[in-house]
Every structure is written in C-alpha cells, then in structure tokens.
Amino acid sequence: MRTLFFHLFLAATLHAQTPALEQLIEVRSGTLPIILTVPHGGTLKPGNILARRYGVTGMDTNTAPLSEMIIGELESRYGGKPHAIFARLHRSRLDPNREIKEAAQGEPTAEAAWHYFHNSAQQACDTVMQKHGLGLLLDIHGHRHLDQRVELGYLITGEQLKASDTELNANTALIAKSSIRDLDKRSPESFAELVRGPRSLGGLLEAQGFRCLPSPTKSHPALMAGYFSGAYDITAHGSRDGGSVSAIQLECPWNDLRDRPENQRRFAKALAEVLGVYFEVHFGNRLRAKP
Ligand SMILES: [Zn+2]
Image (tube, rainbow, N blue to C red):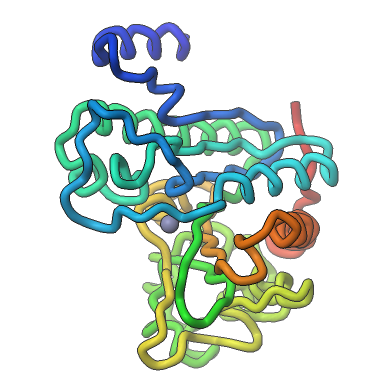
C-alpha cells in the first residue's frame, strides 16, 4: 500500500529530469529497535534543484560510510540491521535536520524529499514501537568544534547542562522537553546519570576510549566552546512529544573518528557493543532483532 502511494506521489510531483525520491533519500528497513538517520552525509547536487540561500550548507563528511559501518557492526553483533534513512542530497540542496522552510527554502523537489525523509523516519519509529514496544533513534552527524569529543544531544542546552545533578533531576519540565523523555521513565537511573553518568551513552563510549560530552569527565561544555544539543530530527522523532522511541543526536569529531576508515570502524564497533549495554541498563531489554 505504501509503495503504491509512493509511486503515485512520485508520478504526481516529479518531472522527467529530476532524480527519483528514492535516489535523493535512501530508506532501508531493519529488524533491530534502532533507527539511524543520516541527514548531512549526502553528496548529490542535481542541477535542477536550487541551492539553499541561507543556513548551514556544509556536509558532515564521512558520516555516510561511518553509518554503513555502524549498521554492519550492529548486524554482526545482534543478527539484525537497524532501520536507516540516508539523505543522499547534499546539504546545500536540503537540510532534513531543520523545519521545512529553512530545510528546503521553497524548492519543490527538496520539499518532497524532506517529507519523504521524515515520513520514512516516522514510519520506522512506528514499526519499531509495534514490534519491540520501544526503541532508540540515533541522528548521526559530524562536528568541527575545537574540543574533539563525541557530542551527544538530548535537547538539553549546554547552559542547562551546567546545573548540578540534583538540580537536573529536580527539573521535571526540562526532563519532559528532552528527546529521551520516555527513556527517563524506563531507566532505573536518574536523569543526570542517564545523561552523564558512567552508564550514560557518553560514559559507556568513554570506557571504550572515545571522549564524550556530556559524560562523567565532562558534565557540560566549557565557556564559549561549541556543543550541539540536537535539532529537528530528534525533536520530531524522539519521545519529547510522546511515543516510546527516544532519540539522541550523535555528533562525531573529525580527529581519530571520521578521518580514516580504521577509526570509523573502531568507533562503529565500540558503539555497537555499547548499545547492547545501554539497552539492558536503561530500556530493561536485551537488544535483539525481530523479523
Ligand atoms: Zn550535521
């Protein structure tokens, strides 16, 4: 049914020279309760899609091959693949991690691609909720901040992270606005532990040799230092506004991670291992595939 709708949609909105939506946004279904979205790894710049005129237009280099490795490592460890949505369009043509106005800037094909990206992400979340009851969406990015740490975004700003653990745990309004709102209810750990404790995603990755922010070694960004706390993708598809799929924006540094295939592989292996622990501890579920 979805395929039929999709082809009707395609026929109605695209003309002969424009690449098909499936070429602009690649969607793969999976069997694990994990969804990867990769909004800024695309390289396609079709001549008939106008360039965006404002906003950030630089791509997150190597996040596409890195995500392929994450998919491969998850599969070899857990016997199934995550769902995955790759924007193949270059960020100068579409930024899926923004609301549609800034994302597509009125370009009709880019708008259609934006809808396809987000409908597909939502469909993946719905499938995961149906099959597994809960899940995790990771929005994969790359940053060039001076401090070369993996930045984990939960829709909690760097300023808000300056609060003490006690203050964070008491701030129910802030917790309710995070992209892991549902996970916080499931986890036996406090919100502060879930975000920057030893068994937070940052804590577990640090134990594997990847410095993170937030984490037990870095509770909040330094003064004037950059930190990405998350944007449209994890707002739209995380559990802030309901549902049981929580979402984290994962921003990978260049040095010793995105720079070379062997470092991408090292991180992909570490992340795959850590996600199994993360699921057991916080979701209370063994990470496994369901056909
Ligand atoms: Zn990005």
